[in-house]
Image 1: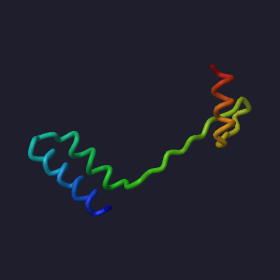
Image 2: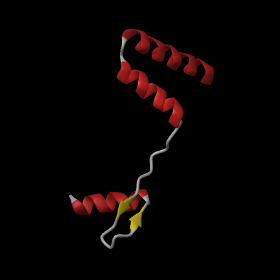
Image 3: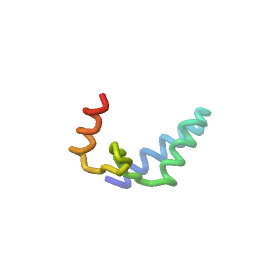
Length: 65
């Protein structure tokens, strides 16, 4: 499955190159270079400490808005 996905992505990059879609070509190349980047959800609390717990982040957003 992974190989099929890579083949599809490479074919998309090739068509972007042929069509002159340089922006999408370079965006796809940079995704290959960087690899998977997991998202990190960190917020600051009122005392400038870091909060990483999902429930605490929701409480922080609820208090702000």
